[in-house]
Length: 287
Image 1 (spheres, rainbow, N blue to C red):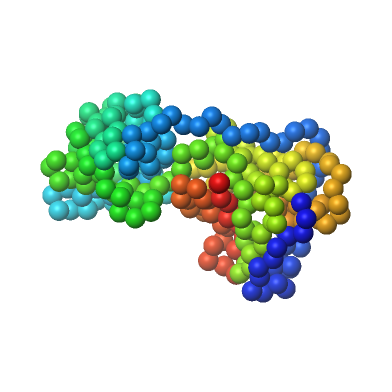
Image 2 (cartoon, one colour):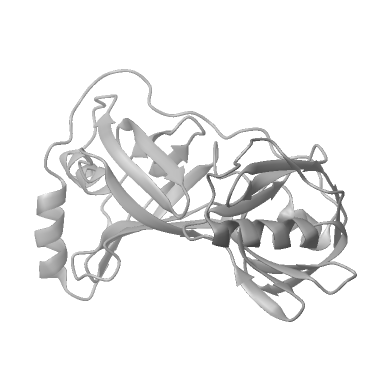
């Protein structure tokens, strides 16, 4: 990779932050990345294609004109899988069901709880659970509200609002670095093919930092991801500038640090301390 293209409103701030962040990148040996998983099966088109394979946060249920909010930090969620199953959590317990997804509808029988939560769930969550189970029964129309947000409405007029939590292919896909965030500054690699992350379901991450491969930990839960233990796993012969720049992309992540993340179907934004001048993180995109 050649030099990096810099877009910075305050370059001094970026340099100070990056100097603190790049300390401690280790070296090692062996391969640190892999290719993407096989493409998902063909969907039914329309909104059904967007639903399948992704994980959705359940925001609220409207029943009888009353809105009931779900638990915080994506405590209630649902996935619609290509194999005709749905699974998720209602905030109290996991559930699963058979599901039929078309371009504009989702059909579910009554969902089945897969764990006993008697006496262990807060009353407010049990109330939400009851309303959600009733609303997610029968044939529901699927309406896209805006990017990454949909409403599921049953024939009785009960409505469930969902927003995208994990896009299909979050795991196993190459997420190329489009921008590194440091305070109010942004740095972009000249060749994003040489700087990318691959997340995996077992809580690991690997990829390439411009010259060398790397490996680390990346555990997604709720609306947070914890990054830790980034280390180089190869020691390739590259020009000194590329070697220096790859420390920026790796940041020398060591002890576990929690980041907030947000997604679209082809992007992931991962930011620590988002409301501070010392914020840091990554903007990742998929081709």
